[in-house]
Length: 267
Length: 361
Image 1 (cartoon, chains in turn purple, green):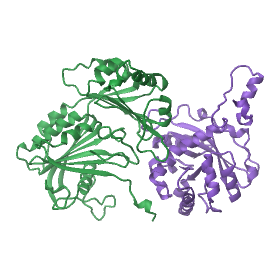
Image 2: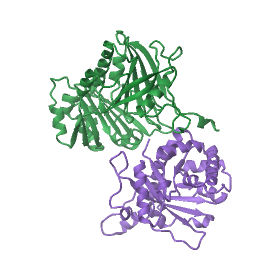
Image 3: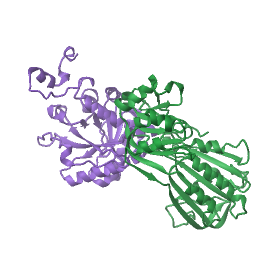
């Protein structure tokens, strides 16, 4: 019952391709998209990229088909981790609206579900899941408000990957019962995007019910965005804004991440 | 295959059979309660051109207005409310808003305003409403119904002020609107024109499209056999065939055709020609009522046509289907009804809705 969103459009340095993808997403009916910057620490020391501001990409964002408002574009970071040390939430993470993690081992999956400060946990779609999902980390993630993401473009590209995507998705659905799941493309090309109602139908193949499948493209994505906003606030209640006045000691305190302050000071 | 995949989203079809001359016939009520109509299709077998009577009725259809960026509170301000909304016959529907994504606003001719809001807007607006009947897991959509003809909603009263304040200051909802007013001729449209002149608007006539089909196989229908048990075809098959004719889908089921395997249901007759006439726009029930009356008169003179059909489609994004029954959109939001009229003034009425809908009356 909320607007349709696609929270995974791969970032590419080719500006025209990115613009074309966002225009196609607006044409298909998505009201919000997230540009995904992927970071993999296993390779030689990689730095966390700075997200490009949206105004750099478009002077005027395209209008969503069938409505009169322009499409909304947010930035997202995906950290591919094989080791717990890879995920270190630094200040650079704060410049992204959404943070996702792609755990490669079972131990990391458990830690990511229970403790990591992320919004999205990606599920493997290009390979067979190396570990089984267990009920306790999955339920822990659901309680914390973390969502599991299934990308559908590998299923479009290759038939072997299609098998893996469906198999992994069905495993997940058995454990999580269709809750806290989002579906998104991991589109690198314009032709890999599909319309929201088609993806809701694809959700049925992945084991979701009709209502859950439609929620996976709309309501759950909205929840993910709100969860991303709460990472910059204290318990999702207090929101700090930079004061425009010359910096005083008080302003410095207000700018420090509110979550690090003790509870009494926040009141 | 998993059992979920074999299930389709449910749809409901209600079929009624009666005679136009019967006093207790409810065809008038059904037509007048279906407030927001988008498309009307007339299908007459063995007819080449539109009869003059029908043509003149269609010419007299009401024009409607498309207003850009109209704030909703303007439609409930005192003057407009008293002169237009409360007097009845005023239809308004928000344009380019999706019922499953955005906030949708509708004004019913009975003087009610329906707001179908998402959770954020509802909580900010602060008006009393009910969660939608079609919420999945959590309540994400709420429906606020305001009845301006109610005694407690007099202009100047507390409840009215709260609604006006909410829409004016708390959440100033603004969207494009489709407006139509059923004028009985003597009413002045001063207030409506006054409001429209403040914003950019267009006056639009319903669009018409005519097509004469050649050599069309049509199912043979017996007026008394609604369910298709003795000679006629099943209502589902009939509606499917009618839909394929409307869409221009070939029904010959030739071996080389992989796109369509639709066939005309048995028993069938081949008609040498058939007329398909479509009218689209923001159509009000009163116009459709007069069209239906004219269609009843079609069989006053002897004609070759054994039957004729009138299909009326509702807006897929309207918040109500029949009366104040809530309407939703899962993967489709159809809500339409279809009359089949016979020579002896018998009629069939099929009313169909989709997944997120109540049962038609």
